[in-house]
Figure 1: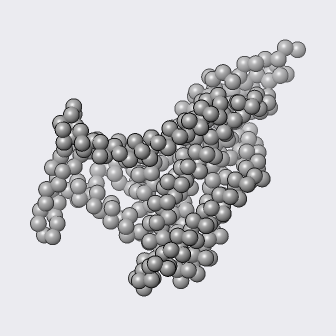
Figure 2: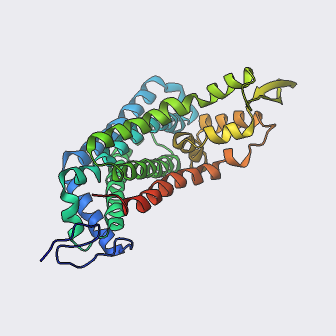
Amino acid sequence: MNTETEAGTTDRGTTAPSSSINPESVRTVAKKDFQDSVRSWLFWGLSVFFFTLLVATTGAVSYFGEDLAAQGATTDVLVGFVSEITRLVIPLIALVLGWKAIAGERESGSIKILLSLPHSRKDVLLGKLLGRSAVLSLSLTLGFVLAAAVVAALLGGFDVVDYVGLLAVSIVYGIAYTSIAVSLSSLTRSTTIAGAAMFGVFVLFYVVWNTLSDMFMLLAERDVLFFDTVTATTEFDGEEVAIERLPEWAYFIVNLDPGEAYGRVLTLVTDVDTIELQAELDAELFGGELPFFLQDWFALLILVFWVVVPIAVALYRFDRVDL
């Protein structure tokens, strides 16, 4: 019997539905991927890391912020500090988790063995995404839950809503980057290329994207192409003050960054003063009311966009690559 080598064809000569999605098959792939990760040091290492991060930050807040306890603002400060750290750390972890998800299997050839089972390519891709997302989400949850008692003891009590809100938004943020990582991994033949792609994503969002606002302002000041500044007026100490800002489309581009969206979504589920203050300052640039694309609810849509769109592109493309 001849063995077929084309995508979606098993060694029994039957064709697997490479263009279809079987929920049971997706669940099977996700379960195996998750179990393999849980049995490794990675899952427990991540759980310990998030636990340590929360406890260490809480310890610093309680030690250096004695006055904050009297003001009842310790949870606000904790969420503010932790969100700034997780904004950087969670993408790194998610990119590492997704790095070898598909590329590693393609490089070793085990992807062909997996596809010889009744799994379509879409099943494998979605299963890998769910499995890696579950590893990150559960390790985050475990770290937060284990740290809760220590956090409450060090702070003398804390706001459960803010704490859970930080956890929930961090999970969505992590899944967004996991989707990006798994999708890129599915489009590369080797872990070396996949690793370079992960590094490129990190540089894009944390070096290039974070400088876009300054870059746009510099171009606007020099009247380059269609860049220009807009004069807005706001009230400061009872007097109207003129401030220069970029046109709205520039802020729309800047705020497509998942990290920016993460910070804005936190205002939906927490009452952290520092985060809300930043939103108020941003609103002053636009005469007191933010455009829709800078509002909290739209930031949530941006995070969902980064979950859905990369994997949708990968589902289309992965069916057509030569393994």
